[in-house]
Image (cartoon, rainbow, N blue to C red; front, side, top):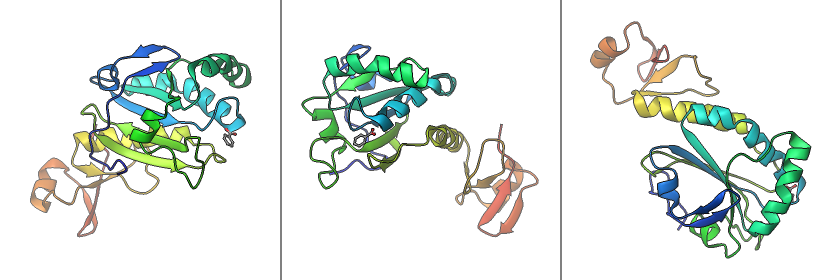
Length: 210
Ligand code: BEZ
């Protein structure tokens, strides 16, 4: 059964380019995490993606998000490839890349979609909260590189909406107005979000909480 939002994600041990991890849950303890798969080492889109994430690492750190990549290629292949990522993108790999040659993690997270490829993972992204529950997931095919700035944007939304009774509208960016959650009564909204604007009874807009 595929993972669903709100599920506790499977724990696992893994060999990575940054050493062995005994427990994914322990490794990310107290943090958010992004686990993202790539189909294959020594391939063009993957090379650009892993470099892009390395370049954004300070932004993930600021948000208390640990990033970790994975593919079913073996560790010696990862270790031979990482130099290319730095050559091409200018960013050295600064987060672990998991080797999953027996596909145990890929299968636990349903990262192999046989109608796309029997052997390689698709481009899956799992955003996992400090409580180890799945907060957001998306899947791209091998031929389409992901937009990792979008990942930062959704992390900002997830972290904001985890703390405050608000939701974020289409194309929201940090600093823009947000929507008051439907389970907040108008009476409570008046004290919690003074000056809010009701565009419709169900669509109440307010400034982004600090
Ligand atoms: C790529 O990263 O470019 C790629 C990987 C697997 C299949 C096709 C393309």
